[in-house]
Length: 363
Image 1 (spheres, one colour):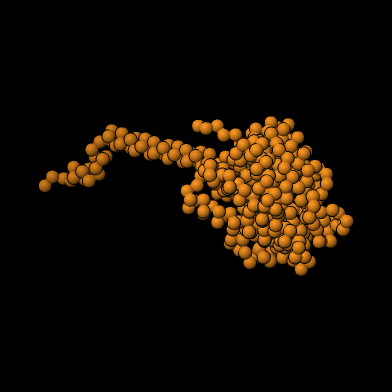
Image 2: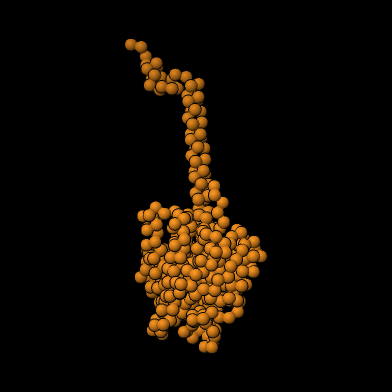
């Protein structure tokens, strides 16, 4: 089999979830193109990737510009060779009720969080389709299925990614292409976005509990690069939200109307002078984790089960087969025992009607 170097592009790689994904691919020895706007975070991510056994190229990129994304793809291939995995992950958001949103804020969130995925996908396809190989991973969210209050711009972008990706998947199937696309739907995570997203609310924003550390989602993304799965749902909360929206969407409307505001805000008053990254990156290296580490979990049994469901199905099948065989053997032994018991009894024991005939007095 041809040995193909794993060359990965990750957008939004300077901090948070994207940086955790870079760590995961680095442990596989991948060569990684790191795309984001903030050079400080990108350079720090590069050092961490190289310390974990990977190679990295820093490419400062604003994914809302198609020409910048295309130029970044060219730079990565010039440095490392053909791109085999493209991870669309870059995002921005505004915490605000719709009545307080400005048109330019919605436009900016849409350009980064939705069109950034479109441009990344197009750059990847331009290279992967002629080679008839490659994987495109769309980092999604439970909010791609279920909109919540105070995040309308972000939810709208995630819904758009969902529709765009479904269209792409059907076209790849139609063309019988071996390029594949998968979506990894994320739960609330303890990332840096809550420290630098634009906030129009009175209090600081927070992820809706339960909160997962970014490494939980990153493991699923890295796994998806080498396993053909249409979609992966990360975290029991993601599974529950998607299922509830399918079954009782009206009830969920009322639940979110009642609890969706308080669950997304801390009790700390917001600082109006706090810098945000909607228009420009916030200077400095902001790392992977947000300020909610003491409330976050680092593992998810649901994720482990989801990623190992093939093995679990095999084990369950073997268990059922073993149970069936043991039951059949037990029944066979029981049947043979009954036959042996019957064979050692007298004729009258085997046929009571003959006993009555034998005891009838002669005429």
